[in-house]
Amino acid sequence: MTSAFADPRTLPLEMDMSPSIELSSSASGRVTALACSKGRVLGSGDIAMRIDGQPVAALASEQPFYRDITWGAEGADVDGLRVALRDLEYSVSASGRYGGDLHDAVAAFQRDRGIEPADGSLLLSSILWIPNAQTVPSECSLSLGQTYAGGDLFATVRGDLRSLRVVQDVDNVMVPGPRRVTVLGVQASLSEDGVVDDPEQVSDIQSAPTFAATLAAIESTPLTAQSALATPVQVVSLPPAALFDVSGSAACVEGPVGAVPVEIVGTGMGATLVRFPGGSTPSEVVLGSSLAGTGCAA
Image (cartoon, rainbow, N blue to C red; front, side, top):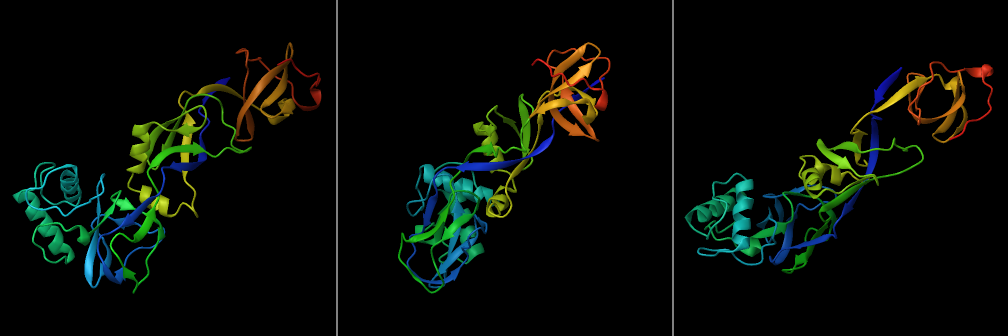
């Protein structure tokens, strides 16, 4: 009797990241407090460091900030500032020229973090641009008490996730066929080459709430995915003693009309799960010492 088999398994993954990004601030002075630590999440809105006692706040946007942003300014960086503040739950519209709503939101952001003056104008020296709302430094370049000159390297962070690839090994031979994987709670498709590279799915994985923490711990805790065939295959459960001339996933079984080839696709509950390539399943198979052991034609 055949049954459906989805080949469920846990797969180790390796991440392909874009080139690393160097972070810096335009602030200058002595480092009097520092919140950079390799592998530790630095979040948007966190105080990244203090220069001469003045806070420098991390702020995430798609485009790096490159100028002071004040009343009347407009452009992609202004819209990026609006999005960054909205993500921090400040009340501000998503786009538009620097006006009253953005002025009030910036002033509130400054007051909440002790940035002076809290006058609603965003000085470049008061922030540190980071590429993601939760950014994980791979290297920190400063130490407490160091003199920092504007533009000096603060930290290096990994780039964006580009794809994920299954780490192949002899114990990880999968049943052929389209597969689905679940990575950090995100459903994705796995190519025949064992790669997740759909841009939308990759973006969803990077946006998962646990991605930053996973990245921070990647050296000690490798990333894994739960995987199964998109369409289960029909298999037959046989006692191991029914198989002979086993070579990798290929084997033979002997039925009423002689030996026939089978493909081993898995094991479970003390049985071996096989497929009959010809599609015809024998009504019975021979076990153990009763086997003729004459081999079979693939």
